[in-house]
Length: 219
Picture 1 (cartoon, one colour):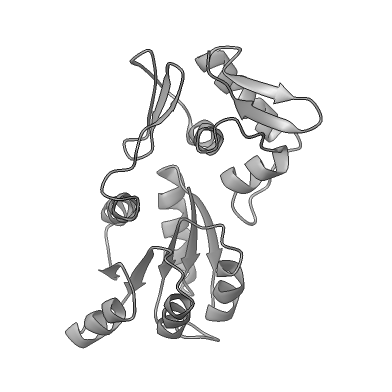
Picture 2 (cartoon, one colour; picture 1 turned 180 degrees about the horizontal axis):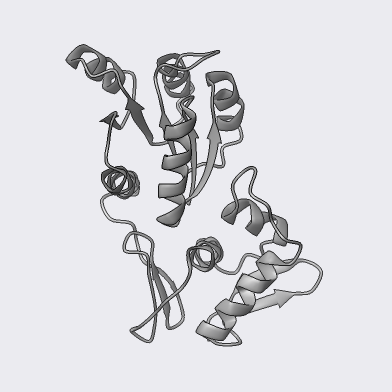
């Protein structure tokens, strides 16, 4: 899943991006409200983490505009503004959750996952393709009930493919899903991860549609 982090503090931004990335999320990071506004217009994110005290455009204004255009993107406010009035204002403006700095990274990851579950209607449904199942919340993949260990990149690729069963996704689409801005992507990085997935899941689990892209297949 792809997240947008809007945070102007470099130390916090790096730590959060690293923590969420280690939990299997793809994270794009911007440092001001205007850049966030442009990024959110793309509609590619599953959740946004927004600081309130931002340069160029305040996080509260960013949140209000998001809700005024009826964008239901889950928003987690991450801020040092700790008064009850600030928390009430943020939630009333349309935030789905509110985390105060300083915070524990493990708790932040848990809150992100909980918010994504709520947005999906309580519990994220299992993704299935033949004997293959993927649990987006527990970050588990099983074939015929047997758990298969995947790296974070492999899991993200498989999740992207299984979210659109039968659809052919290009290498560029898969790169956009798995890699955030500023991350160096090798010319054959996606192919290497897909090769490893086939080795773990079975050679016929992912099909290469020549000249177009890849799709997950059921036996």
